[in-house]
Image (cartoon, rainbow, N blue to C red; front, side):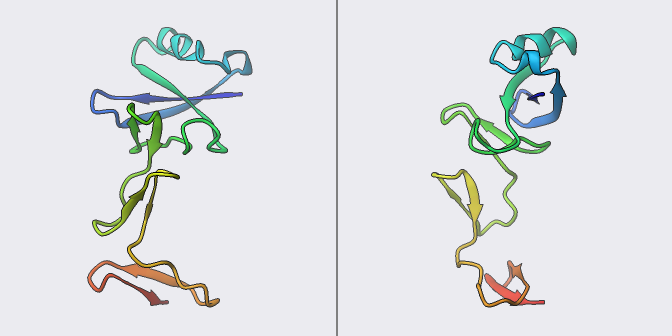
Length: 111
């Protein structure tokens, strides 16, 4: 199987489709455009081996770095330019307790 993301004029992913394996190449973008009647299509991979992250609706395509970037979960998070994923300003505690991020206090809070 091959996976492609359609992006809008703002480079935001609007949908992701899985097509037959015979289209698992960069020419598959042209095939998607023809089959779906237009659009801008970019190849992606579930394992993140293509363009750092698997595209999903709401992700942004960064054409300069040729990567998909997930939506920013909180204003305080910072983009890691190695993984192109958002990271909290303080690392998640690794103490066996489930935590959630509290943006108001900029800290991890135990559930």
